[in-house]
Length: 521
Image (tube, rainbow, N blue to C red):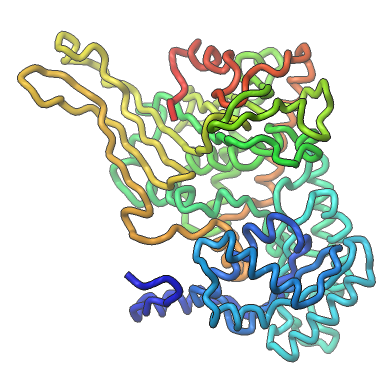
C-alpha cells in the first residue's frame, strides 16, 4: 500500500492504456468559475486527472466569472477547494506546482463582449507560450439563464469556425453544457438552435453526470458482456423494474431555481430517463456513440404516450413539510427562503411507465425521486417473475420472495443479486440471501468521480456518455406531457409528506394496487 502523497508505479500495460487516453493540449474555459459546481467538482476532477497523468503538461484552464479575483488569489482558492473536495487529498505539492502554472482567470460578466476579447487574448497567448494548439473547450458551469449570453458571445471567439485567419486549421472547439438543457421542449429546441449557430452537433457535449458513474456504465457491460443475463432481460422473465433516486437534502439554497423546475424537470427529465434508457435499450451494433445513443433514443420514443385520462394511475407528486432527516430538523419546502407560501412545486414524483416494444410490452417501470427523504440512494432494481410452480408450498416456507437484481449507483456503487437458499437444518426452509458486489472492495481502488471520466471523454471527442439532441427532445416530450396532464387535475394538497419519510402515503398505494411494493432501501 503506497503512503498518502506518493505515486504507485504502473505496469507497462497501464502506461500504454494511459497514453491512449491522453488528450491533446487545450485551453479549457470554465464559465461560472466562482460557483459551487466548479469548486466542488470540476477543479478536483481536473487535479485528479493531472495526478493520474491523464492530462498533458500543456493543459490550461481559464476561469471566467464576475468576481474580481487576482490571479494568485484564484489559484489559492482552487487549491483550497481541491484539498476540501478531491477524492485524492491532500494536494500533492509537486503535481500542484505543475498544475497551477496552467490556471488563469478572466473577470467579466457573461453579457460583456469586451470580457470575451480579453479571454481571446489569453487563449492566443497560451497557444504560443504553452502550446495549447488552438484547441478550446468551453464549460458552461452557470445557471441556465446565462447560457444564451455566453453562446452568443462565443461567436466572437469561434468565427470563422474553420481556421485561424491564415487558412490553417486553428484546432478543435467543443462546448459542455450542464443540465438542465432547456426548461421544456420548446426552450430545448431554441437552445439547440442557438448553440448550433456556432457549434456543430459533434462539438456539443450535453453533460449528465450520472452517466459518468461506474455503475451506470456497468449496466451496459453487465447486460451485454455476460451471456447469463441478457436472455432473461425481457417481458418473459421480468415482472417489473424500479428506479429510485432519493435525496436526503432539501433545496439547499436553490429555491429560486427549484420553484421554476421542480423535481420533474430537475431529475426526471434527465437522470431518471437516462437510467431507464440504459436499462431497457436493445444491444447496440457497436460500443460507439452513434450506436449507443441510437438505441437509447428508440427507448425514449417508445415510452407509452401520456393520456390525460390516465394521469392518476400513472403519476403522482408530492411536496415535503417539516420533519426530521438523519437526526436534524428540516423546515418544510414552503418555509424555505424564496419559496412562495402556497407553492405547488413538486419535490417528489412517482411514475409508472410502459415501453411499447417487443422486449418490454406489459412490463411496468416504476420511477420515484424526491428530496428530504430518509437517505441518499440511487439504484435500478430489476425484479424477476416468480417460479411458475412452487414445489415448496407445503414446507415451512410460507412464501418465497422473488429474485431481484439491484444495481446501486450511489452512494456505495455495486450490485446485489437476491435469491432463495435453504436454511441449514432438518426442515426445508427457504430464506432470501444476497450475492453482493462492491466496486471498492472488489477492485481495491477508489472509484473516480463521474466528472473525471466525462471531462476526459469530451477532450478526446468521445461522446457516448453524453446526451444527443434527439435524446433531449424525446425526454422533454414525455415530461411536457406529464406536466400538461397535471394542469388538468385539481390543485394538490401540499405538503403531503414529512421530511425524513419516503414520500406521500399515496405513493405506497400507487404501487400496491398493482400487487407490488417499493423496495426498502
